[in-house]
Amino acid sequence: MTSVLQVPEPPTPAEVKVAAARTSRQNRRGLLWLLTPPTAWLLVLYIGSLFFLLITAFWFINPFTSKVVPGFTLENFVSIFTVPAYFATAVRSLLIALAVTLIAIVLAVPIAIYMAKIASPPMRAFLAVTITLPLWAGYLVKLIAMRVVFTENGFLNWLLAPFGISGPGFNTSTVIITLTYLWFPFMALPVYTAVRQIPHSYFDASADLGAKSWRTIRTVVLPLIKPAIIAGSVFTFSLSLGDYLVARFVGGSTQMIGSIIASNINLNPPVAAAFSFVPIAFVLVYLWVVRKMGALERL
Image (cartoon, rainbow, N blue to C red; front, side, top):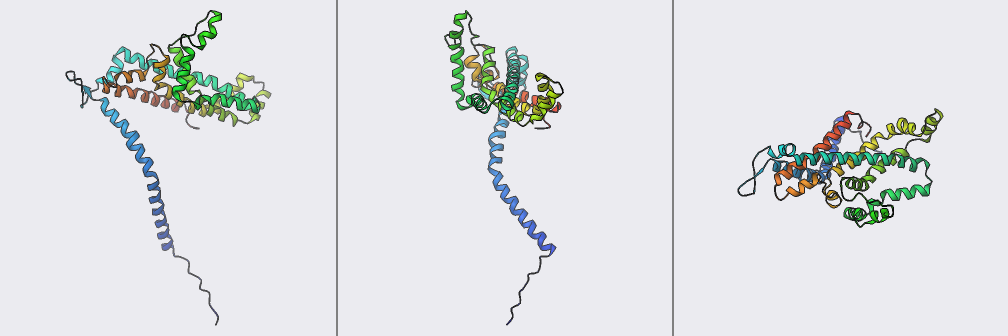
């Protein structure tokens, strides 16, 4: 007997459409199960906690019982602008964060250019380790190290004593130096990565056209690495703005936003909650400004 090979008939367009719809439903169902845990974490723990914090900011303290009473008042937010100490602290924190960001940019750009285009491989590796070294230790370890350096009987005063000079001690300048030391890697790493991607021919062409080093940096390098600078500045600005322990350990009498929050967290939680939104507002305004400048288009 001769067997006849049966060739299955191709599916009809209707059957193809049904199978595609079934596969799409299965993919959506799998994607839903995959995204449920992180979405729940984002909504419940992160956004939910900020929502409850915002609600607390509208509550008030009962003057007779000194207990928090649920309600609605704008007095806590108004006090940020009407209480001189609160307003001065907010402005000081903003200026400190901007100063840290600016110093980090000024230091990161030339170091990144040297590492990416000039330094030998051993020197590049050494600088990479030096820049990322603060990330290897815990936050408190680095902070205590800076306190030891700037304390009255610390290393800096011992080093400057033969010249009859004393260190800055604990003040706003020390806060800026310490914050720059803590968060500089977050600026240096993205800037170095961006500079490394710039072709060498760009530097050669700039030199052939007669541009000096600083003009090449201003007209060639900075426009190309602007997205990296903005990305790094978001970290340095936001982390410096919300820091609390630096002002406490090396700031002396310097107060920052975190200091106000910490001092009111038990005495007046609604005021602490209202003040917690000041850094968020500053960061949102900062992002809005850089977006208006077109700096986020290539991020």
